[in-house]
Image (cartoon, rainbow, N blue to C red; front, side):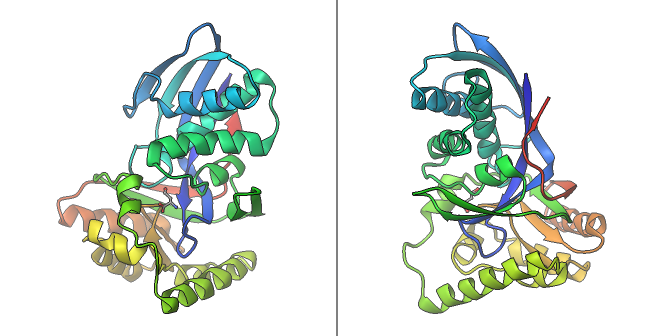
Length: 292
Ligand code: HSE
């Protein structure tokens, strides 16, 4: 059996730890079968081939939830670059949980997602579901609450360009620098942006969605890890982007607009002008996990 889990854009502008959306490229694939011992082989981007592998962590978490001790032999083809900001650990974590769910016949969405979030917790030191949840459903997802787990889903269908500069920013580092309190004016601005963005999405008004891609909770603090941010953003907007923001905790960025391929080219050239290589993915949003 094999499952494909796609990259995700978490936060999506003002929705820190709340909004996320699945994209079509890149993705991880996990083939698996029941086994006497845990084993994982990795192709593609390198991640641990031992019990620290996030797919093993989440698969074990799911087995523990149902009181089983089943082990899996897994082959992980890692197409999502780790520490790039597009839900790499979330995708592998969800793939592990889905694999174990398939073997044990578990169909409970919440249980699968909680096991996947356990993998995320181990990877990033915090429980956030805005990668694993959109990776599971594909849609634009809004996490209303974790306890109980309540999720809203908006079907979406538009193109984005996601650009990964050759820089690593571990999510744990990008979270450590965030203050625990934010000024009231920033909270109000984020509320206005987030509420308006959801309505614009429902109305399929991409230009307005783009205009609302801003954030006052995490981005102002994270810019210190991404000194290039404003330069790249200006170039993207000049190239016709309706909006531009960081994907998850960065350094990946994304833009929406009419000609996203051209916008992606300009973003990559801007990085290149700063001696930073970048991978460009022109892709549709709205991709969930797929079984083969
Ligand atoms: N919401 C998380 C963060 C996503 O911004 O830290 C991490 O991929």
